[in-house]
Image (tube, rainbow, N blue to C red; front, side):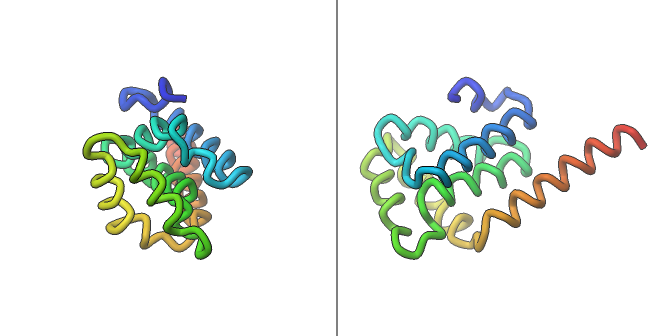
Length: 128
């Protein structure tokens, strides 16, 4: 997983990875909120800042799910646990991302749909 999160990887790989991570998070909430999951969350944090906009949106959606931002019952659990595990400045960077971007997301379905449309348009334009 971490190999696929390199910023030099193709956007299609990043998007597919983000989708897979979101499925895992939906199947088992808070699965990445642990010491072993921290590198994946931090890789996602990097891709939220250093990649194409459609990739950024997908990893925003993943972090929104992984941290439980949209879950009214445990919205603070994921973030506070991550903050306890975060290394260096990553906790501050994640908090900034949460307050400026992730907290404004109402549903990841909008992000998933818009990313699919972007990809389809790009794919179709190659044939037109």
